[in-house]
Image (cartoon, rainbow over all chains, first blue to last red; front, top):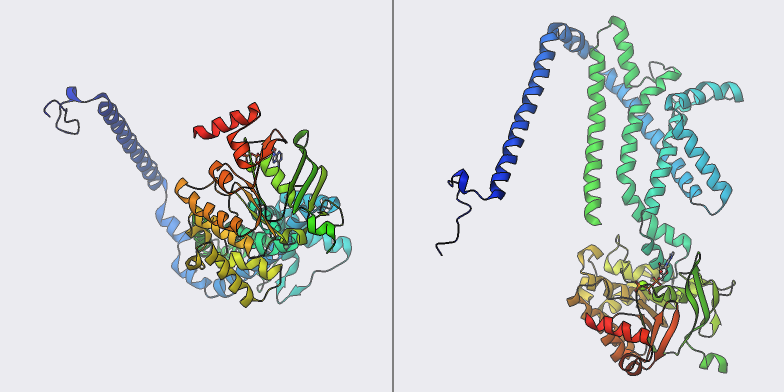
Length: 287
Length: 251
Ligand SMILES: Nc1ncnc2c1ncn2[C@@H]1O[C@H](COP(=O)(O)OP(=O)(O)OP(=O)(O)O)[C@@H](O)[C@H]1O
Ligand SMILES: [Mg+2]
């Protein structure tokens, strides 16, 4: 009994410590020192910013309460509402196009595959702003058509955003369908289901659960991209958040509208990204 | 019924060949399984056992030879494979249950969609089949809530609910913890004793010896030795089979 060393006695002198503990303590000391240095560095940067900033000016130019109040209620009832409507409309269009392109890309008919590949490459490769401009200005001139406004929604911009979202969503949806294990298809076919039945009642329901998180992510991206729609020109009725903020800013060059618009964007996007996080965790559990 | 149909084997393979690219996995297999017969296929990993089984219901497309089910060549281009497969139950090593459906949902799905049975009929048959594999009380559980052995028994119930004439088992117990293997083998043994035609790929030599009417040893894409279980397993003729059995019995 007596010759068993009591190695977990913290009062042991350094000299009696086993090598494992001595090395562990040295590492912990290093980690503690690095942590303290990181805090000091951060505080220095913060102090520097505080010192050089003109805080009363910043408050006057960006956080003016009267200016902020004057934005309401229009910034909600017109601008934020339009942003949400444009996002949802472009998202629905994007999902429809994306599903179609995903199925075409997996088609056994070569021309269909080529079409889908070409479509996806073009609209993922172009800047969204360029696509919007092309659809909004060039297409009407070139084809002599005029995009109508439906229920006050400028359709040209929505179509352009749908085209872009569709290209990204096609790949997402295809990955979802192909992410369903091949054993699922084999089991369904071995029971006598047709390829169509297999896709409809076995593959798509499982693929859908896989793609909800990336689909929600795409909605967040779209929400931000609606800011680009103002490139096509807006009226007081069709204005969305960013343009609304810019218009309010240009009246007296007070930046408060940007801050308010920014906060509204975050109030829309943060809940969505939170939902994505939750869904991703849930997906991980069920697999 | 003609005389040919009465005497036709349930499953017959004639010169069956299968290549993946340049890799010839099945090199001309001839095999005949009579109705109500239980045939076990044994062999080393990569010898082509799964590929053979999957050619029987054409989950894998044979590159040569014929597969006859009840005397009819199902490699014929006019053959309706969906109809053929309704009649051949298949059980996979990885169960392949539908994870978004309960046990009951798994067993009723194909009954409703393929056989067009009413919900009531499908549910009644499904509960009967779940009871048969000893899982009546798990009807409302999702696959993720079941042990591997339970999942595999649900998969067997799912196949049986289609009233198949024959069953294919591809290493049905290989993915299971040792203590769960027995339950699944019991179900398979009962099925065999009830007269189901069964083609079983397995590494369970005890099962092959006690349950099979006929044992086939495959090696590198050919049938190397076959016969009655006691002969094949107890008195191997080829060095290949002797080596294989020695290796298996070591474990
Ligand atoms: N889809 C496929 N594509 C290419 N090669 C394949 C495919 N499926 C099987 N093979 C090859 O065919 C050979 C036989 O495979 P198979 O799965 O039939 O063997 P097995 O006898 O079932 O082995 P195991 O005991 O490991 O299951 C292997 O060499 C494998 O690599
Ligand atoms: Mg195998």
